[in-house]
Length: 374
Ligand SMILES: Cc1ncc(COP(=O)(O)O)c(C=O)c1O
Image (cartoon, rainbow, N blue to C red; front, side, top):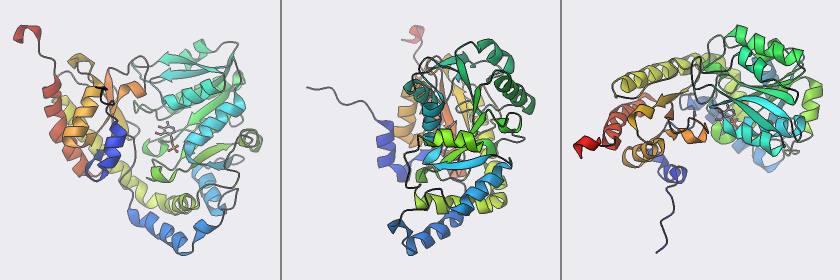
């Protein structure tokens, strides 16, 4: 008899999405839905889906994005999620043999795009204090083949963020060595006092942004980049959305950015409260720790290495038995992926209640039995 197919957590979770507390993708479930609904309903009523959007993007949306960043001289470009920008940037700015200074853990999809361009990442192990890159370590890693530095701030999965002076120092390295600084700021609205690398190295920095997490629009797939007009032109050669980005995504993002100042504070506040509750749960479970707390994003890592429990087993058990979906670390770190799970928490408090009720129980049930007790 053929072996059963391996458990597909995403397939299972989507099939049961009405019952799942989605703590696995750093998505944001706290933005007031009225903000989005009205805009999308109007676009639906006007049957805007029948025509192509303006290829360069809705002018108001472009204006709102530019204003959100407040960097005169830098221009936004829209893509289907920040992901597409990341792919285009790797393709347009890297060649075979180039090196990119990056980290481990990291958002590894970017590393994959870098490899597709024929380049390779030099991954600095940051699974130790201060759980982020430092200008000193980046400087040591820069060699004759280095073309780019990857600065994800705040960092998925750890939730660590960069102090302003560190961003400045890394930006200065990029400037001095004429490197591209890829500054992925997907989670910047969750980070107090966030500094953009573009402030310090506007020519060298290509900023990647997204409305998936701050505006709670992950399903609509809209993001982009921000750079000098020359850089945008170079990267845009690899644009496949020649006919524009999804119109519903554009109207929703426009509505969200227009009103962001009125609701983002509450979203971040609830996210912080949820993070504190998760910290308290983790503190009660022997052998589990939070490497980074508080998170500057809406996710963090729970280290479970001392328990001997496999993160994949924990993910599966929480999801199948309790409908709580956290993410096993192997997707985020080649070196440390078996030591942690990632949990995100821009969620209603009821989702955190479910985490609180299930995490200690599942950890107890999975704990390996000591040899003496067998
Ligand atoms: C660091 C980082 N960059 C980019 C993305 C993708 O964003 P988008 O949904 O806009 O494609 C993610 C998604 O998790 C992320 O964590």
